[in-house]
Amino acid sequence: MNPFQLSRNTTLLSDAVTEKAVELACERLRRDMEKTLTNIVNNRNRIILCKKDLKPEQYELEVTEQEITIYGADARSFIYALNYLSETYLGVLPFWFWNDQKMEVKSYVEIPCGTYHSEADRIRYRGWFINDEVLISHWTAGVSKDYPWEMVFEALLRCGGNLVIPGTDKNSRIYAPIASDMGLMITHHHAEPLGAEMFLRAYPDLEPSYLKHKDLFEGLWKDAIGRQKDEEVIWNIGFRGQGDVPFWENDPAFDTPEKRGELISNIMKKQYAMVREQIPDAVFCTNLYGEILELYREGCLQIPEDVILIWADNGYGKMVSRRQGNHNPR
Image (spheres, helix red, strand yellow):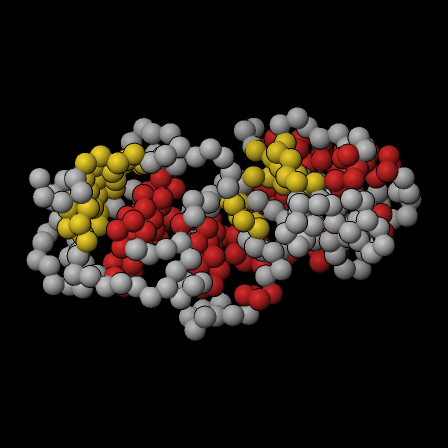
């Protein structure tokens, strides 16, 4: 049997799969085909997307001379399958945009006939934190303000990722919907539990004390749950101070590790219960970062057993506790 010839004449049919993330992935494959293939092959073959009962994010390809059928379980199944075709046969690398890749242009590429199965992922949640994003926050790359972020999310999907913290504070609320539309799960910055608005941004004239304004803090968390309850979210729980500093810097009553740990533990249990009330099968995480790691090590934190514990780096990519001023807990 002759191989399948992928050319710019190849038709991509995705009518049976209606998720927006799949539609965007199809548009990216068409873009990649325009970048790497000329339009001189006179064939009428096609790529068809079909749902199938597979494990989450897994896909199968059935390749004949005239047709490639992509079977997928969900949106990311199809995204990864289309990315596989783009990288393996068109040569478009995961960081093509960031590395200014020069594309090799051909009349067509050949894909051998047969059945292809994706490999199971060894890690369920795989993602990036888009941190210190000032370097892309005001850059358009000559297209739009959203475009560099879309390229970040595309690169993550091409690397096999499925989860992202889409920036911090205002940025996270702007770019989380874009990341979700592209097929990524969302989680949150460690200073923004449940993805809630910062207290000082919502109430700039009030002292950011949980003891004094418990109802206001919990109101922000409730709003965040309502805003995201229909999205794919890994719910980050915890409590850090405004401006991404320990909360006791603004609340001196908490002057011992035991007092600090007790408050954080009680807040995490409250946040956990608030989410569980609306989303019974929710998945949770918390970041053991900076002073939180110290409290955890000293046995001052009580974290629900099914919460994913994320060991954070020191802010410079090294897996050690963060030095803060003259305090070095390493």
